[in-house]
Length: 184
Image (cartoon, rainbow, N blue to C red; front, side, top):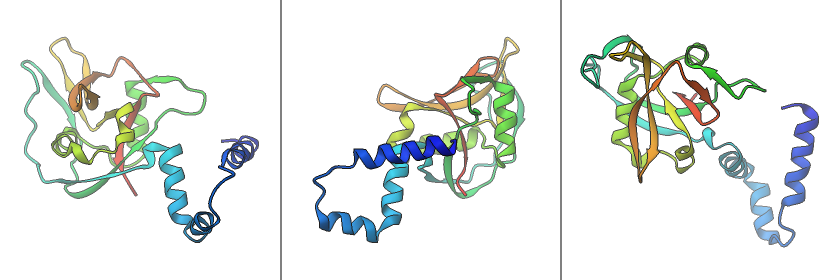
């Protein structure tokens, strides 16, 4: 964010604060600025939330469908992991193709696999509410479908629960998509 835009945004936040805020409540926020920062971050940047899962599965992946072939499966970190979301688009971009998304995900460090998607799916009650608006991509696993298309696993919110599906890398990955990454 440009400095001028940041200053204007900060001014907008100040102008939007309730004028009838109780002085005791205001003082409480002054004394607990970390909690205030957490609330603002969760409200303004929901992908900053995280979820902790346990991953122990290191078995070879089974194809999700007949005639699918495993092309790539990232080394799987196991243990207790804190996962977050990472946006991969650069300023001014509306979308990128899957290969660019995967390259950018790799540059952030660990790329998580289908095993992580399945572990998170098994504990979906832990997934933050704010993540429901995103497609959660696990770019460390790549499958080739029977038509030769490369696909990556992702979770999406549908019909009252999270579902595992596979996104074609030839499609556009836009602002509704986030890469699942290790929270540092």
